[in-house]
Image (cartoon, rainbow, N blue to C red):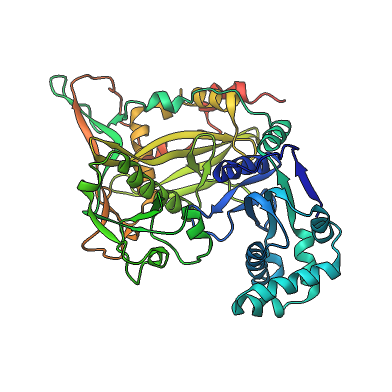
Length: 495
């Protein structure tokens, strides 16, 4: 495919890798790519990011380089050979489309001959050079393929040379940024208090207020070791085995799992540098709190994506896109009390058979800490889309959110059920909602298990939450095709 040059400013190659990656993702999404399916920093994928696009089955595997790229560079050719081998491993209908994003192309005419003009002789020469530089398993895969497949790989590939300014301008032209508006959930949950639950206490007794935080029971020890690598992405990129959650700071790897033969991180440590630390002593240094939070947050992201949740970049909330069937509705079973209920998570808002927009139950799920204790915090909210896929942004989304919450969803009892649903749905390892285990943090499940404990609660003498009991099934249903939609008429106008 043609090579695209985005922007003109290339006087300096001093570009922050993570900043360049984020800018490029925003640019691609503005161009019509739907969402990030996986990434190297969360799932440990070989590709920097894997994108999916609306109405397309094939994935886009993206390699992002905030540097100058040359087809005469041996290291880059070895990496390109790995992508090519991964491409060839798959059946033709399941093969991904390769996307290369870089800050600068060295020897641009040569790139044009390969990726744009599809010069078969040069492509064959390039692939043979890649084979010569590759290990035996990569070499074997490529040598079994045909030159026709080689040409198709480069024909379907896309190369984008871009600078940060060009990416920002390109994104703005396609999809202007919405003005900043604080979301309703920031106000609703800023004090962490979500609901009182059950029967209202007598006026002379305090109510019980349940919070949207769950105490974490951490392992007693944390392990660290020196590494020659600069970032976690470098470690994750070349491995296909699942890693335990870890953080890399100042060339040291930190994790809750011991560095032994069963831990794939051990291969990336320097001999004689492994240390075992008491977690309480480690947390005496305030900056180490961020290390522990990053370890846990990365596991949470991986857990969410493993059950099909997507993250909305603007709100950092996890949600389900619509199903690709006739009605597209997404629902999930759970047990709020003694019996199961089915909660609607994604649903079209219709009137007289016409879909006007989609509503998605969503939640921010992350770790927070108070007084050296760590908690998983759940902040439920709604997201909206026009097609069940592309999440709305800005004023339109925030207005819908505020208006929609004037219905039964603004009631404290429903907020409590939202919090409990998400903690049980994302962490289904146990049926006991008061002790959720996360054994994947460690191989030693008995001695070094990380757990989520009880939902925190406080006694409150103030009585703001007097309300009649509502059936769980009613709260689990999203208002649609009912008299409640009368309140939403403003959003059903034809445009």
